[in-house]
Image (cartoon, rainbow, N blue to C red):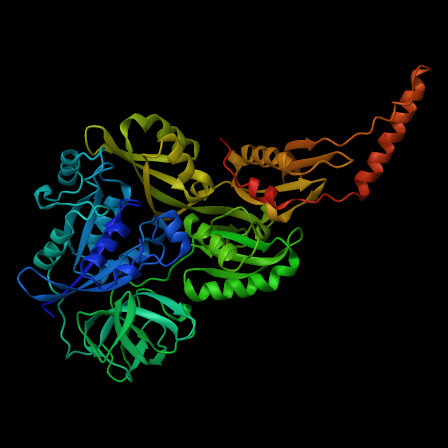
Length: 598
C-alpha cells in the first residue's frame, strides 16, 4: 500500500484539467502514441466539443519515480461544473490528495475556491499547480499572490506547468509521489468500499467504480450495497488503464471497478458503501445522500408518432445517467411526453443534446421550473414542479420557493453591472469582499427560479466573460406565486404555462407574447396572443392577418360600395377566426425560453 497514491485534479471550468490528465497519461506510456487522442478521458462527443467534463473518469497510472521505486497513481477525474458538486465530493472522498489547477492568466475563480473548500472538508493534501504558463497573458506573480491571499496556501510549493506544451509534467508526478500520503486501511478487516461513479456497458451491465478503504474483494464474492441492501455476486474486478484490466483480487487502498451483472445504473447510488454479505462492516462511509433534482422540464417529441422512440431513448439514457428522473406527462398542445428532473441547467442541456444526437430525435422542451412547496387552507402541504398541477389560488395559504447562496467572483469594474443583475432577479446582497486589489467576491441570496431562466448567460455577458459563479441551495422561503397562462387565439396552451413571481409576471408575459409574435406565422385572420393570470389578461400582442385588397375593383362611385365590400370581408375573417386553427411551430416554444435582453 505504501506505493499507491490516490489523487484528483480540481479546477474551475476551462483551466486545463483534461489537458493535464492527457499529459500524465502520455508520460507513463499506458497508451500507444498511435492510439492517443486529445481529451482521452472524455468519452462523450459533447464533452469534447464543449471542453467540459460531464462524467468523471478514472485511470491507474503505473509510474517509476526518479529513485527507481514503482508506484500506482490513481487519478480520479472530476467534473468542473456546479451542477455536479455531489459527484465531485464523492470522488474527493476517495482520494488522499488533490492537484489544484489554476490558470496563469485567469487566476483564482469561483469554483477554484468552492472545490478547494470541498477538498479541505475531506482533509486532502493539496498541491497547487499553475497551468498555461506559456500564454503571453500569463501573470505568474499575480497568481502566486492570489494563492497566498485567497486560498491560504504556500505559493512557493506551486508547480509551474503548461499541460499543452508538456512543461513541468515530470515535476507534477514527482510531487504526487513525494507529497501525498499513501492510503491507510487494513486488508484483514471486513470489506468497506465507497462507490463514486458507475457507467453502463451494453454487454456486461453496470460497471461500478469504487475505492476500497478496508478489506479485499475478488471474483466470486457476494457483496451487499448498504443503502438499499441489494445483494450481487462479483463476476470481475480490475483496474482502469484507459481500458479495463481484470485482476485476481483488489485490497485496501486500491481504486478499481467491479462487474456483477447489475442491470441498471439506478440500482447503484453514488456515495454508497459496498461490503461483504456474510461479513459486513459496522458502519457505512459517511456523507451519502440521494441525488435530488432541482430543475424540472417536460420533453416532448415534435412529431407525436416519435413518442415510442423517445420513451426507449430516455430509458437507455437513464441506464447511463442515474441522476435523471422522469415520469410520463401529456399536454393538450404537444401530446404525450415526459416530465424530467435535472441537477441543473447544464444537466438539462446535456440530456437534451444526447437525446437529439445519440438517438436522432427532434424535441420540444417546456420552460424549466423549480420545486415549490405549497400549503393549502386545509393544512396539507404539496410539492409541485409542473404548472399544470398548480392548485386553485383560492385554496392556497402560503407558497415557498427554493433560495440559493451564490458566490460570484468578478473584477471590481463590473461590480455595478452584477449588483444590478442580481437585484433585478430579487437577490439579497449578503456580503462582498476584496480578494485582491482589483478582484472581489460577492455573496448573494437569490431565488433559484430566477437563476434557471438565463442568469448564467447574462452574468457572462455583463462581465465580458470574466465573472465566475458557484451556488448551493440553502432553504425554502415564502413567495408570492402566480401561474402565467399563454392564450393563442383564445385557447390556453398548457405547454407554455409558467409559474412566476407576481412582481415579474407582467414582464415575463410581455416577453413571451413578443417572442411568440415573431415566431407564429401569419394567417388569413388576426391572431391574438395573450398572457393571463386566471381570468385577468396582463399582456397582449397581435399577429396581423394577410389581407386581400377587395376594393381594388371599385373605381369611382359612392363610398358606400367600398364600405359594403370591406364589411363583407370583415364577416368572412370573423367566421374564419372561429373555425381557424393556429399551428404553433417548434421554434415558438423555444423562443419563450430565450433571454429578455439581447
